[in-house]
Amino acid sequence: MSLILQALINGLVSGALLAVPAIGFTAMFAVLRFPNFSVSGIATLGAFAGYVAYGAGLQVVGSLAVAFVIAGAVGLVLDRVAHLPLVKQGALPAAIASIASGLVLENVVRLGFGNDLRGYDRPIARDMHIGDIRFSPQQFETMAVALAIMLAVFAALAFTRIGKAMRASADNPELAALKGIRPQRIAMMASFVGMGLVGMGGMLLGLDSSIDPLTGTRILLSIFAAAVLGGLGSPLGAVLGALLIGIAEEGAVLAVGSAYRAAVGFFAILIVLSLRPRGLLGERAF
Amino acid sequence: MLNYLLFIATIGGIYGLLALGLNLIWGGTGMVNLGLAGFFALGAYASALLTTTGHLPILAGWVAAPIVAGAAGLVVVLCTTRLREDYLAIVTLGFAEVVRLVASNEIWLTHGTDGISGIPGPWRATLGREWFNAAYLPILLVVLVAVFWLVRRIDRSPYGRVLRAIREDAQVAQVAGKAVLRYKAQAFALSAAIAGLAGALYGHFTSYIAPDLFLPLITVYIFLAVASGGVGSPAGALVGAYLLMALLESARFFVEYIPAVSAVQRAALKELLIAVALILVLRLMPRGLVPERIPRAPRA
Image (tube, rainbow over all chains, first blue to last red; front, side):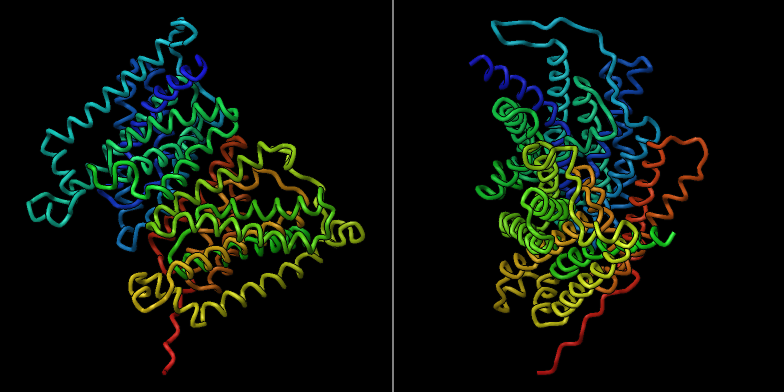
């Protein structure tokens, strides 16, 4: 029983971290209309940018800001240069180009840092116990940061002009353009903020474990699964999906061991697509 | 040197098979298979297991591999055909990862990350290594030509025209009374089967397979081959595959000469080069070297 409870808590924590890049991915999909596979490379880039900033003496929050800006800027440039010019031909050429640019980023990081595992040098803190359940204070700190990021994103989407413009543009680009919302600006905003979130997600997920050039590739399927599960294009759905994927992954570790943890995302996608193809909250719950 | 060229020609031919398979669905129906490496692996493992653990003749492996990979392709495509193409892209990507996970973890069956060694090659023992390479290339070329002939037949047949119609506008094809779903599923399964066959031919050539040989990078290679050759053109797929081989090998020599880089950095540079090449090809020459020729509709 306590094992299951422990898995549930661990799953909620990792799900909350996963939600950050999943929101970024799904928001980009809502506006730009192609699945951007370079999130793998961007997540790695964010994790390493945060790592360097943290090593240089910044605190967690400051390092996350660095990860956000660098990942967002690089993501924006890649979208402009490599992906969006291809969207005219359809979503697939853009998606294929984004796989290539993810690979570029992964190898740029590998050129600079090699293949070794690196860990953030965080102060060691003693685990807390309630009954048989173990909590690490740092895990909760990371989760609190993730929740704060999510709150900020949702507040921005709900209350700011640019957030409302983004939602309008995702809902109906032509109508939004008629109302004077410039689609170009919205697209750039979506690339920057979306990839910034993915970069922060890479760092958040790396904080508690370790990072290497394949960090982003390993979480790619989980990010996709969270977004598809919630309904592609729906940020709230992405959060829900991420929590469910987090719990399912911890559950799978409990049931069949850690070897097949990475397969959970794939099977979740298959099940959702067969039973409820538009995801839990539908595609347009922006 | 001759042996090296034979080796390159054979591996290039295997990439050519994969490219023909990808071209059939990408050029044909506009679907993509980002899990190409997974179907390639599935065929390689099926044939290797049947001929080592199963003690069956090599030919049986070569027959079984495309069947296994094709069946897997059918399952994958049937889960997603009702949806937009971008979902298929995501699912196939996941499929390849799962194949690699199973190959790495089901040690009783696949020997895990150690891989399977000692996969028999036709007359390898009697020919010796060098003559074996020389004998394998013609076998591969026969298969390659046969598959090329097959996909070109499809390309120019009424069946191929339906596939193209689906690529251009699935709704119109549906309205014209074509069973779009069935065509898509058949094309995808056939494409997966070709990838499986390529896997079998690969395993029996190198005599060793392991999960690490079937990284998603292979899929990127093949996309580069098809894109540079010309999407929708079978001849372009073959041209692209050998071009890819030339690029891979020259990249290997090129990075050798860069001073003061480690082996890891060399490998990273090579991958970087391939990825940049794919972006450039997609961006600058979307029609490829051998552009697709749409045959004129026959007069009724």
